[in-house]
Amino acid sequence: MPAPVSGPMLTIGDFARASRLSARALRRYDELGLLPPARVDPFTGYRHYAVEQLERARLIAWLRRIGMPLAEVGRVCALSASDASGAARAIRGYWARVESETAARRDLAASLVDRLKGPTEMSDEMAEAMDYGMGDGTGDGMTDGSGDRTTGAPRAVRASAVGGPVGRAAFVLRTAVRLDRGLVRAAQQDAAHADPHLLAVADGYGPEGGRAALAAVGALEAVPPPAPSARAGDVLNALEDAVRTADGAVSGLDGSGTTLTAAVWTGGRLALAHVGDSRAYLLRDGSLVRLTRDHTVVQALVDAGELDPAEAVDRPDRALLLKALDGGDVPPEPELGVHETRPGDRYLLCTDGLSAVAPAEAIRHALAAGVGPEEAADALVALARGLGAPDNVACVVADVVPA
View 1: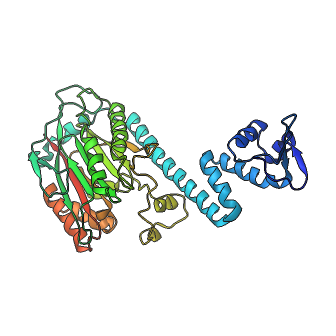
View 2: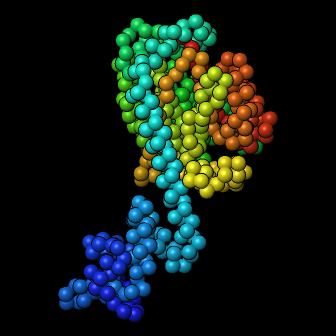
View 3: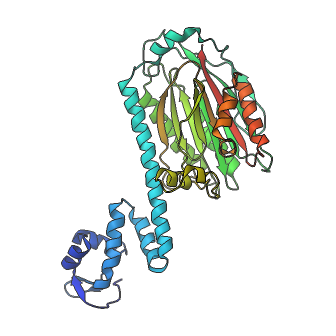
């Protein structure tokens, strides 16, 4: 309904020029209730605006200029009238999400550039390193919080990740999975999985967090092993579809959701999908590299230069998620990437029950100790426990080894 009339009136044309909003936009904002005119002529339908409405109109214009969706614009405008500090926090939170999503897209773009400008087949590099010799390729898998583990032998993938010729040197993942309830939590709400082509960890939250994590990982298990001719884009598409399916599997669990970090092995590349603050790491030549970015408010503030990384460690809200699988109306866009592998690479997927308590150097030391995946996974759980293990711990360790 029209806003109360007070002070001088402007026609819609004059108001549009003063506010830098088009007449069409003003009519749209009127329909949405964002900016109703102060008066509408009952006979002609002409809209007139009060001069004092310019401040709100300009705020709307600025918020739209930074890309804020109309629903959020309405909330910020409502806040600005009664709680200017709250409106400022809402804008800062929105922009932190934009920075986080932009950073994820930047990483994906860099991954695509590296892939397109570099060698198209991982097997070319691996053929030169066949004497690396790191074991027989046995592995294990675990998908629930019961503590039971099943073991099986991985299959060799006999082609490159992008559909190279069959018969080149093939490599497999030698894996270990561990779940630990920790020393404080009463229930296990993490889930993890590893098989010859899929690695995944999930960290549930809320009253049904354990079910949410298991449902998400279960949905990812349905991703079929990549065909020998599969290209990286096909694998990423399948992963993204599986993440959407996982989000749907979580719907209906009251107030609950989960993070999800998953990787599909193609025989020469690792395709990664990530939502939330679980993490993926790569240990290569003794150096530890983090492959994922936390989808948290704190990380977004760090990315935006508003928070020092050293300060982020002790923030009480460091686990406040910007993205998670919660079965909402709009599934979150996962962070996607493709990573070239080398023989001797060691990958770690873990929940924040490990990464939030253990310094990166301690994680690197445990991974680089010269032991197999089983021993490394045990060492990581022991590391978390030695630091108090205030949360559930899930980790998957995977080595790239000759078949």
